[in-house]
Image (cartoon, rainbow, N blue to C red; front, side):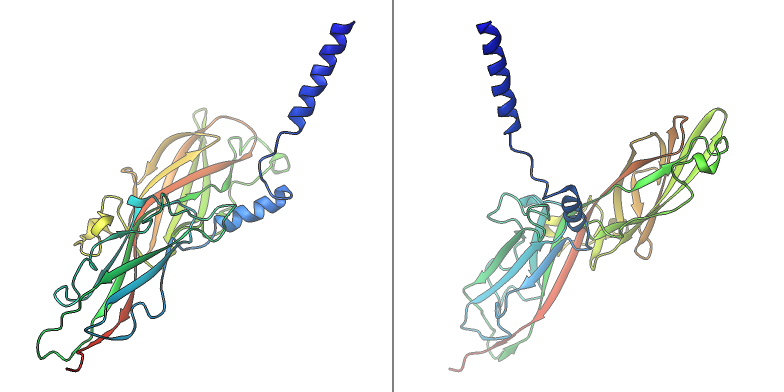
Length: 321
């Protein structure tokens, strides 16, 4: 009898401890979490560059120190490691503004990672990069020098889109009243996924015959940001000085999966989609097991390098003797 009581007490104690286990943070309710996640995975920005006011000033003497400070914010949904993003300044004569001002600097300098947006930080991570020169050396008889500084950020980024699509393996064998969804309706995504490259829309078609059903998806991709898409094969460490050729531009690596099907093939077959006038198309075919119409996630992953910049003109004046 005593043993039975002990077992009951132990069971109730264990049940109490399990019930006290902290729940994972998910907002006050699932709707709140869903709203936050949509906010995180929206927008067309990756890296945002903002010069700090008066660093450098618009006008300075050649006896002044040169100090340029840039705020870097990761406004997208993809985290950046130190080797994933670099900032450079070009456009000036290195014999005049001396030192290491022209050297590439990691956007995640002094950080382990420059975080993208997430449910705990919907604004993304921020860092500041300082470029410094203790010496400005104007040539003799040059009284004024007016370079336009070009601040260039090159970074590796990723877009993930997972729209819910309809597949209908039995499209001719079941009446419309029995169908849970209509595959013929195009899926217009939110338009942006928290990255400068976006999946704009997905169109589906069903091909049946010879005892099998296949779903064919046309996936429209676009450069939604303000910069230039580069191939993942380009060197982002020094891309401000890199000489790009046609093959380096507008080239995006892609990977497509369908939860409810097995991949047959995708085109372009080499796994890269090339943008023309900022847009491109991927076509993927999947085998679908026979079943009533159902919705399933289509997971599209896009990998690419991206380059953005802003310019600032400055004036350097010779100090009166």
